[in-house]
Length: 442
Ligand code: S3P
Image (cartoon, rainbow, N blue to C red):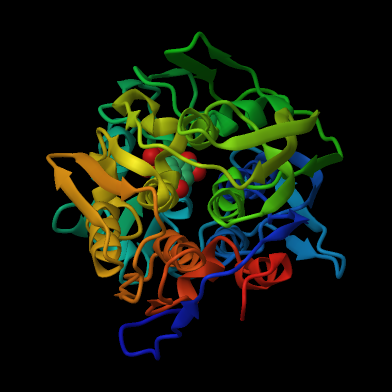
């Protein structure tokens, strides 16, 4: 677990002549959390292949084990979850420490709302800064009580209830985590719960509920779930597709590095996750998709990126939910593009693993790029030339800031140093090894 007095692990990346290869990235983080949580609610054993074994997902596995769910891992990386059924979680025997994982913290609060337990949640320094009020508000309406630090921050105590109340809740922000927390609480709440979302957010929870035989209705804005549905015991097998948010790093690198050609295989192509690739195409990116298939209710395919000349574009606010974690790497693409890229409506970036709007601007500025905010919009002025580089970038224990600026150094005129790479293991433990396999220098 990271703490402020730990020793930072910096890394420096340098200009490369080419990147080539065909790789698999680890399993999707959002789907991995949900696969563990929903398997715990099934009746029977679920076998999970391709689970992301990053710190964030391991935090979810640890929390579920604390709640009495037997979870094992075979030496070949196959995970097995012995489902307890809806309503079958035990009171955790100790504090639930969710590390750096916002998704794990918020979704576990939802899952544990319909149980009469008092549970202490905490997390690392970054997670303790992040807002939990967005889940506290609807879960309180369902009957949970919370005692939190000021502003709804961790550590907090959740006291759930065995008589949770179904609600109809309109999301005030576009957040798949808030939607999912409510749906997970609704699973064990008698009656009909409805979540209304004005902007569509990733729908992995809905898809996976259906995979586990739970009926969920969705008409695009209203998602409705009847709680305490009858379950049948069944052995299930689930495969987690590759994470498009991780694939984004080697793919953008391939767009920017001369002569590069990189394929990332078996990437999740859920249309609510592929906004980055659409925007990159609008910038002129040579991106192609092949081998489209379906696994576990999700579309997957192989994405190939080849070196391209990119131009600046206007990225409208309404696409943000489909690429919310990809703005740091899009900003690196924009810094290499010709002309101004304006990314609109990024208020949510301020409350991610770090204040990403500030971290992107500070990092790009340190690399000689003209980048600034206008309200909630991020503007990056590209010259069509590789950035100067030469700076040291502060990552604030944010995995996506660390990986993005590592990629920045692969084209910059002078090496780029990221001050701390440890957070990368939260989502993409073999990032450095894969980049080196493609041709980046160690
Ligand atoms: C996630 C939803 C997004 C995303 C996060 C994962 C999820 O967060 O940024 O990395 O798994 O539901 P918000 O729900 O806060 O937008």
